[in-house]
Length: 612
Image 1 (spheres, rainbow, N blue to C red):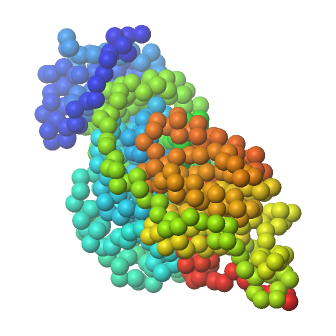
Image 2: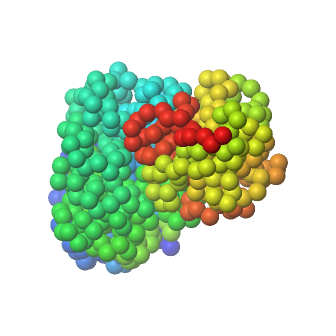
Image 3: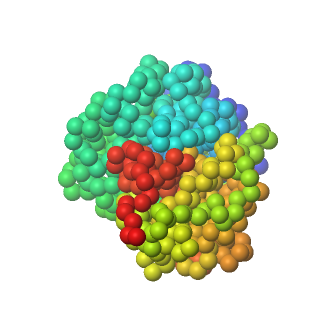
């Protein structure tokens, strides 16, 4: 191990801007001043020209690349650190173009610790989860924590809290004045995904004002068009200003978005597998890959610890038939260009931030060394530098307000008077996809209460209001988890309003699970036969933990095992559970207002018809 590897490294000083470093970068490149670090003998993966240049050297000064070429010996001085890459590939640090840190169940600092060893050096994050709980205050806390990290975390100002006005009640609401204020913060890169696509299509003044405030600041508007309709409504949405979209699930979606001047963001998260079904637009249809971008959207801590982050997405895209160099472009320079940062990051070229990965295979992509802003931050999966800690205020840890102790009576679904059976609407979970199905079922009525049916894989779902201590509970039915016996699972992670979602086969266990989360201040809990099987404690806003990712992942693994013990067979069932209140993705969801038909954007009755 070289002296560079053994060096005890401390948190680096803030990165200098290019204007502040320009004179030195020029001097280093010309050989008049020594570099801080020279990486020798690497295979330079140039994402601008899409080629691999062997026997290359990279000279770094002030955390930026100064010289990239065949021989940097003229940049070396007595104090210059030398790193022999021994023929390994040097690729740009990976960029996640669209993601929600809260989905990792971690604070920005802990999330960064988890993903840096996987080669992620830039993230474009939309903290609309915490915005729904704590409003602009929460967004600012996420922004400030992100600013302390060793890598680049850019914040998109959340656009939709609530995501669908009139169909849900959030802890706080955001408006155009909040967006305009946030656009002046350092680190705000644009507007988060515009989920209220019906509002944009309908010309809603508030939504268009938020988009205008963003464009007036010359920043990027994120998109979210969760509809299969590619007709006039889609065209109206594009005309409203969103510049990208990650909600596509099939090849036609990706093609339509690119043809209309959007960037198609293809996601591989913990539960979303939308790359394979859309990448054929490039691999088979031959569309220009410059307008395709890879992202994760939502990754929980277990995925980060056990499987990876953007390196996992790039490997998957390659496995789906994409050329490795094109896959790398989609996770680096394409993202930087989209956000107007191509002169700042996304490639190994002079002037850019010196974010680079050393790997010995472009297909399997082992992450041997991660360099961020010119300093080694991870080696062979182990973090080498700690960032400055962020102290989350005490008031962020007391956000679960139930208003009362819940009992099984709160989860009772009363049938219409005199009914022996009841025909009800059922939320149908679709494995590995965000959309749900609107299903219908005939269920038995016992002692005046409609009951689930294990044979039909139908159990109860409840949304418990947790922001204003109203004590209100909305009850309905869900299918797709295959739960058995007497059980319940509750979570205060409930996109996007983040009330509490409880799914169960037994009302008493549902009450126990809900009260438990009220007691601990939020998280996820699984109960069976009156006993808690697993608890993921998420005290910050009921969404995140400031514990290390490995600890949170271990708790999440126990939660997944507990779900399996209760009969769950669906892949990444927790992510499906957490999205059952997302009233902007079809077809049927639950909110504090009732059941929501997202194809019509209206609250609908649970009952279809009743047989007396």
